[in-house]
Image 1 (cartoon, rainbow, N blue to C red):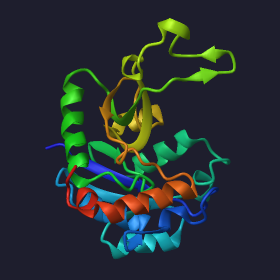
Image 2: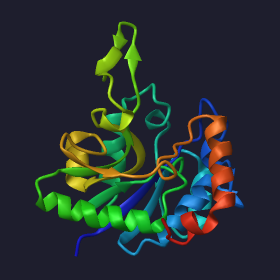
Image 3: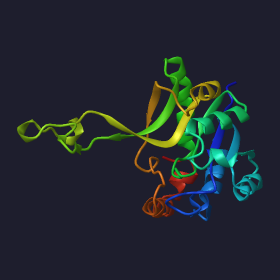
Length: 229
């Protein structure tokens, strides 16, 4: 049976929101919330919290997960490239497949994780090398020189007819463990694009993202905590 190891990467520092990974959320913290969501996913064999923070590692122990004590230079996004972090973390754990599950995507439900893992295993047999969660993007785009994905005037089409573009949400990233080590990355060049809705696409990068996520959790707790969609 394929063993899926879920990795929650958290670090002590954060640039836009202080102590972002342990910000209050749903009566606990973002980190603890993610641990409890992943515990409800039967396809996950093991949960590992990787961090340079002793406090966050203690929270992980409290919730019964395994821990990976990461070197400071693999956490500051300056001393070493991100690829070195991926290789070090994935080399330190076991399992056949790695699910990279940042706690800054708090509105991914247990059921959605299960569906993603099921689709990922199917996609490997279809020739894909990994799976990424994406949000379908259909909006009129410009750069400094004008429209990028449509034409002005009577040639403009409705937004529904714009070419498909995809935003990588970072909420669900799955790949074979040996390949993540080889690529030094969380997914490959031919990933299956697993489309999620705007809720699941939430990625907390700024204070406004956190406020919005808290509001949605308060409004629809059963959707995000009990496996609903």
